[in-house]
Length: 173
Image (cartoon, rainbow, N blue to C red; front, side, top):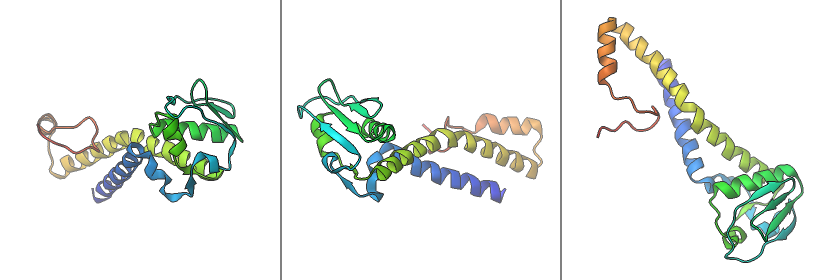
């Protein structure tokens, strides 16, 4: 039981850290040298138009169309994809915000930041299922420890509130 409890605790910590990174993707950038797009070594050309123009990035190879008038040309498909991912997740809405956005200045940094974001997103999506499995194993061990019969187990299961996501705080309404 101790081992299962520790595993559940570790999964919960990992989930909370990943959830924080997903909800504030700019936090991922703290570990990188950052600068404006004009200083990024992985950009071939920067054609940004009107500061008030809306940003809705779409990638086609090495080019990212920021909107109808504006585009950014990258040195590789991978950097273009990483840029698109980060811009979308950081909720950049205008060309002005995009110009002010600080992203990693190296291609390796940009790729690593996008990968860290995607990895965090994967943890947020997959760990609730892992936690449910561990919680079920832990419950079984507790039932066995107290020699609860099937009827008692069903009663406990019925009376205990179980949130949809076991990694979120359990709050009674």
